[in-house]
Image (cartoon, rainbow, N blue to C red; front, top):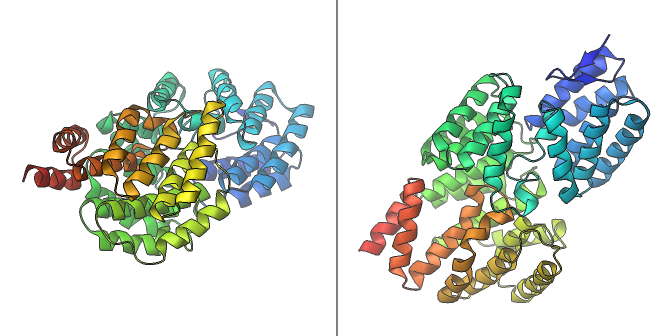
Length: 439
């Protein structure tokens, strides 16, 4: 009897139980829901020769920052698929192997080539998508458009009620400026499968971009208790709630959410989310003129040092630059800038000079040299997208520029930037800032 995955693609296993568990495990994986590892391990145990089960395990392990386990699982998958896999399965495993072993520059074209032949292969189609996907971390300035183009090229390949595709198609449109369309698509996907952390995340982003921060807070407040703390996006989705609270002028609520869900001692998320969410929320608090409670910066610094000892990932490096500047560690900041600059000169930093520039600007801002911060950031404004992440995450750089403009007396430029931001997205914080400048 032939078996298929959840999107109808044939899978090479002789076990009905393994096939069922694989379908369930992959859906848990692509919904960022707890239980994917355990379910996929059961699938592999039901049929030890089932290459795709081991490959999916490798993907989960990579997401959970377990590189040794990811490499072992993908090596097993590669050996198995070479002996008995179909052309799709061999291509599937090869693309995943590049991704989970850190060969992103090769993984992106491999994934794109694969989905041209097998577009409903959602594990591979998922690789270029998302805030931390291969497009976002490619160094491209137009990765938001690239995601939309990819989704639209393959929209006809998916059923109208495919919750996963609705989620990522919606998120991609919302990030690229078609906010109402994106929000509608994300809402449809979420309504079909609420047990989907990626769906709640996509909808929170769309609401943020739609200026509906209160609605995002209410959504997260209702939904988050249904999501186990072991879920990889638990702390990050709470970060969206804290960000909205801060934007509407409630730092006490933002800090309460931070302390309960986001800080390193309580979050079980991906290290890159824990570090960047921590740094970005604390930086915003401080930049907006609120007090950061004693010890929070030091805890963030200790965590970051243990998880990100070496530079090379643009999105992380930009936040590490903010962290070093905020904690007054000018020596570490300068050393990181020097290393990043050499990586740029050697062509080893895909995002280019914007990364060390952000770090230099953060140092100037923390030292009170707001005019210097402006001189560094203004020419780089069009390249910030190259660090990856989402619009909500990258807004911290624009916020830093805006506060620096206001504090350096550049009222005209500050008003212009505020007008542009308010045109894109209504914001109580930006409205307040604009009224203060006018006064």
